[in-house]
Length: 448
Figure 1: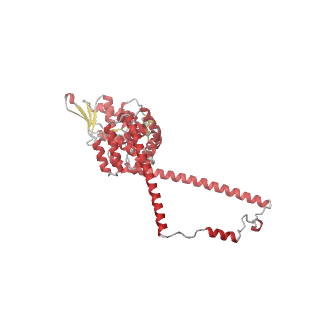
Figure 2: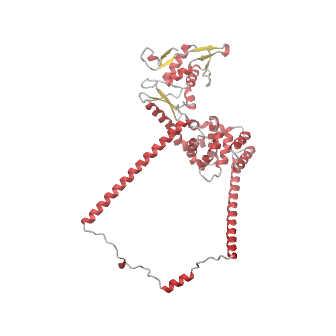
Figure 3: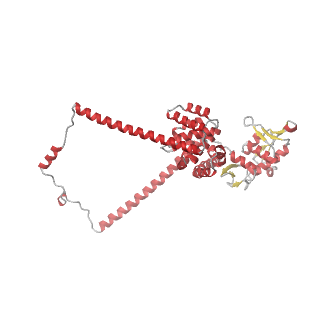
């Protein structure tokens, strides 16, 4: 396959080391169904280190034509008839905008996304190029960020190692601080002793005879009287034992009844509050019925598989299923919500088998915390951390959800201002996920 230099300005340089395959196009069909197959789009994308969908979408945006990419076969289709020269010019425009560094022109750049903006980070000079956000492709890139190249397990291990090193650094700094304080105290102590010696002061010990005890021994008669008042034995007769057992049994029974009564009263009150809130939020009777049934099933410790099967049969929409599940798990939970998620991580994993289901989980979670229990919204970052650590939801899904609040509003009708509140609380965690990915990319680049 013929290759050419990347970038038109480098076309005449025989020693230029960055190369890509020359685009090959194949016009197929006729009439209104005519289309162009970019035969080697995947190979071109590999040479440019960009997802093949990006190149194809760019062509579609520039030509005003629909595109279709088959992830299994790599078939890349652009509607309409377009020859290889047209495609070459489009790829050249893509390279200038989304591949080459805006500073040094080197094509070794990495696409980075932060706060719905696209950047190019150059491996050669380190310059960060700010891509013009007016191009339609940028919206697609933000919604479909490029993969970091690491598997989920590798990312997880990297983050754990980073946190371990951070903890070691903190411990080292703490130890230095303690050592410094000890040295300061020793220095002060030595100085004080030296001053005392120079003034001729001597340490003295107190004589017990000089300080008589305030409570002299009591007379022998008084001691004997007190000893007579002490009961040294326990009545072990059958009647006494039965009496003590009855008292203990009665006391335990009363305590148990009071505790059980309190639990039942609290549960009844929680149900009333939930019913009132669901009515206020205009939940349908069918959904309320599903919530009650799910609560009973979880209380009776049904298996995860049975609960997933019940939810799938009861509600068609994945986001509604997850909303109902989080309502039951979180409503009036006495412990931290992160602990609840950790305890139910296996069930939540089964509910989020696909990326679509994982996103639905985040929609349901957002609804419950934003619209139903906003007073516990501060626990959101910890919940997300547990969902990530327990491999329930991928980091790319969390970042995508964070960057697109409108999707949650559309899926479950979450109020925009509530969505903003959620993202303010989660901002630090979402940025940590993004920055950590960027740092991982930089580390990989340095290693290379």
